[in-house]
Length: 269
Image 1: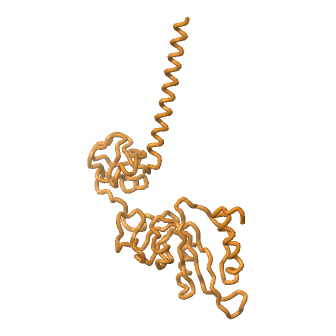
Image 2: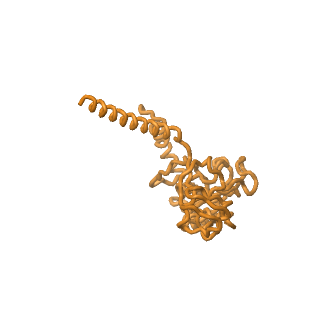
């Protein structure tokens, strides 16, 4: 009876040790891979011989470390470019399918159009260096668009007044000059030296495209400025007021107080 109890205890200890070791290894794995960017790639769903005419059922997906797969892999969003194409070489199940495996595959259509989401539009707006955060805005950044306009005064008939307001918030930048998002290199001059580009292309809805086009054609009456966001910031500010000279005088004290209390955490004010 005593030997049986010792055996049971030994088994329990062994199981506990295995569980603890599994948890330890899992924690170590998470620590080692923390912050490593992964991408989803296309793999073979089964063993595929050469000359296979690729169908959707032949394709699978898996996650891989981005730096380990290189640029020759195929992404899931690129399925349409390889369907009904023949394999040049055999690919075993769960192995990546590379562009070089596929006969006459058109790798990533060139230009801007394939980067535009369905239902969206690309519109280019003119910005000078200071209006694009000193020319440091890059493709894939997200920005707010501010407009400054000279408009007829609402309070003084016959007079013009300058007004600044936020036109759009959280807009994705598709291109700066001729430098496209997802492009390996600029198609023109280097846009990342100060003043290297004077046009920024944005992803907008059709209604927003109309708005931006109208603003740009207000010759001498309007100017657009980009306000750069943190890439993780998806916040939306409701009811942002327009700023004119009268509003400027009234809000400056409140703006400065907000900055000291909320941004710099000075609770004694």
